[in-house]
Length: 257
Ligand code: 13P
Image (cartoon, rainbow, N blue to C red; front, side, top):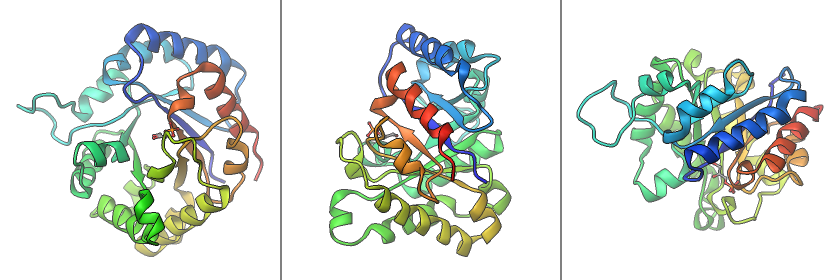
């Protein structure tokens, strides 16, 4: 049985004080959460990581960053290394988000290096894949997903794959209010799992958690997570408020499959 994992990607929102307030609010709400039934992860901006780590100290709530560089250290102005993220208190890191691919020219090759470096330092990568609207409308969805999955995972062993989370985020559903239907999500999640079974083996494919991301809200989480291959969510907008994010996590913990 795969334990659902809900991660909040705060993107470029929240000053340090705002981030502390949000983390404290969630910590209070999650007091009644059964962490045996769900994993909850917060992914603030780099600037707020240490302070949020302090708030989450001695709780079961995980902490993740939104990006990482692959070198251990060096003259790479503006970049942050996996060791620095560990030092700040992270257990997870989002890698290859579509906004990074789209606005910052991130390639599968860069994503692959970032995944390897993160694994080397004991960070669990949340690896994002997903097609844009034009690709979906021209029936390229599976081809794009295959390219993202295979390109991102090149040279990564089955043991290491088992430490990762995959996030399927159709670009056309991100921040648009337009959620993929549970059937559309399930179809791609199943495709990803079958692809992993082919590239690796059935056991690791069955163990890996695949999150859905794109306009996830309290109103649609139950139906999405109810699908057999949807093992969680990567939440943007609705993760910025205590009410909506806590309800999403709570509802995910209640879904019985
Ligand atoms: P929204 O939930 O705001 O659509 O964002 C999804 C996302 O990009 C999470 O990484």
